[in-house]
Length: 235
Image (cartoon, rainbow, N blue to C red; front, top):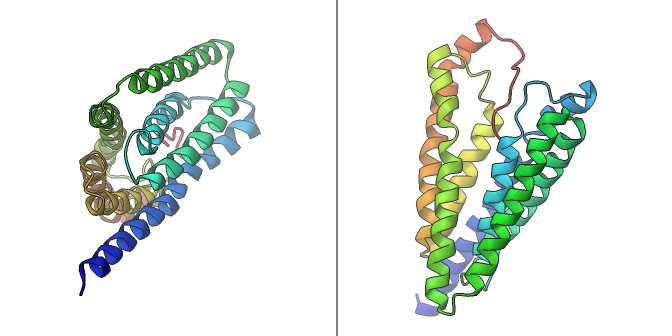
């Protein structure tokens, strides 16, 4: 096999992993829809928190910026998935603001402005860095930290599942989508030799696997005593 053929196969494998990651990420993006159906139906955000959508928006914006050619080479599929994710999170935030109580609405709006302000600072600040490698390192570390924090957020749910021996707060589709998306982008990062992508997604893959193992272990016990969850804690 020639070097050119090997490179072509390598690139195809990377693109396939990236496209798969985009597809599986869609499962994560649509997972809050049942929550917002309930919010719209009841005309109230009840005990639901808007913070996960605020944080997810910031994460999507930072990772979207990292994937652009201005920051890192050949990471367009990172930009596409996070652009779509940012649109979803923004819509969720708007719906939340429309149905939240006044105090919660003011706080959420302030956080939204803060997220947009932080992203603007990151965007403008990174463009001031003339050295392309340093610019990539700067935004890369921010996106990596953001992704690791996002993937670590289900640790609370994992702890809750173990304590309650119930998976009612850990939907299977959400856990499966997290695992498949993380695995896809872990491979994508490896094929592209980009540690800022494969390192955090490697952590996400392991956490997703733990969630699936716990789900299958406690699924039978959950059926014995199930009820409608009051809070879906993350998106």
